[in-house]
Amino acid sequence: MSGEWRDPPRVLGEGGELEDVSDSILQGTLAMVVRNSAFVLGAQVLMRLMGFAFNVYIVRKLGAAHFGQYAAVMAYVAMFGIFTDLGMAPYMVREMAEDRARTASLLPNSIAVRSLLSLLVIAIAPLVALGLGKDETFILGLLLASAGQLLWAFQGPFSSALISRERLDYDAMMEVVERFVFWLLGALLLVLGKGFIGLIIASLAGVGARAIGSAWMLFKRLGVGGLELNPRRWVSLVRGALPFGVSSIAYVIMRRFDTLLMSFILTDRDVGLYNVPITFMGMLLLVATSVGQSVYPSMVRANSLDPAALSAMMHRVVKYLLLLALPITVGGVILADKIILLLYSQEFAGSIPILRVMLWALPSLFLLEIVGKLANTLHLEKGLARVTVINAGITVGLNIVMIPTLGILGAAIALVAGRAIRLIQTMFLIGGERLSAYRLGELPKVFLAAGIMGLGVYLLRTTPLIMAMSAGGFIYILLLFALRVVNWDEIRRLMALLPAKRGAQA
Image 1 (cartoon, rainbow, N blue to C red):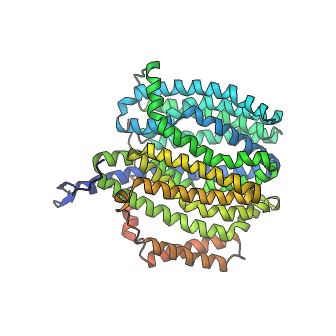
Image 2: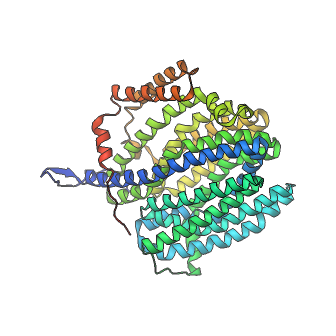
Image 3: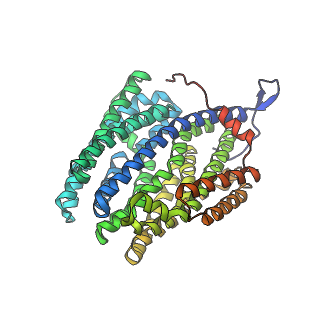
């Protein structure tokens, strides 16, 4: 990209009037984004609600200490698992979204490379844990969880191929299958007293079922074929994905290092108390995650057709994400005690201050889902890799300083600071000339609406949780209309983008 903004060409619209090509592209792109977001968000709302209920059951069933062991195992295997992907997933999405013919080469070769790397992880990870003095239960759980990387060597590329074809509805459907297998089998194994080892076994079964379903969708429903396995392309594949891989490695370190460090210097109970709010935050991020997944291939397409359309689309997406993130943050901070005690019991009262601190990272996390994908769309993945590596170093440093002195509260503070710094870094990377179109004039009104809503929730904090939440939401929506942050025309345009029927798309 040259960085220059030119007046877009104009075409004859349906009503006979001239309209910008970027407007036409924007409407088509927004329709794709809204449709994909609706499918993905609908599936994820269902999954997150049911998954959250299952997670509450897990936490209550295992207790703080054993839940801490489970979280530590998953953090440990995640640290090794990052070396099985090396950035191939986002690289494949971008490359196949730009040219679907590349699927024939990228799909089989990425599966082969990831399978070989997964076998190395399965062999090395348990040996490292044994050398670090971990007990037999931890090592067994790690061995089983590491075996899951071999399943993801197939499922990961299948998912990338579906997403690149903007068939997030199929990918979301298969994720539902995975979750249901995990929940049903996991619940059975917990009842049978298998503990967190049973949960890991159930997760393997879920990923296997998803991989089989994704393959059927890809090869039978979408007709993908003509695959070309060629070991000579493996080096170029890894080289092309490496900038994404550096970002992925640094990102996982940034997300998991806190739990890993705590598992060595704090108690299992502390790890459990810290990871309860982490899990709750993951549920809250479902909107931003689904929108980010949905918008990425559409962003690539819009950028290749007309950068002005991408600019306008990003402005709207950022606006809607902030409209959601700010009230959740304010309301959640006020009602954190009611949320934790209602869901997890008095045993997890120590998680209340942790959740109150973590929630302040939510606006940054929402925006990072989008601005990171914008950087990849603009082919700034090398710069994004530098940003992520630097931020991972900052976050690790904050954790090393804060956790030994303040414990899990220090880890929560490091999380908030690290994510805010990363957002600022990424925005600087994208550049002022590309962000100049993202008008922020409505932001003060959004902050005002969230602040007034927070005052109302605070006054109602002694009422039942559902009453305080409902009243806060009602106040916030009224304020958005009163302050003209949103209007009915805008809502009608968004609703009009949701098609009543979806045809097959190869």
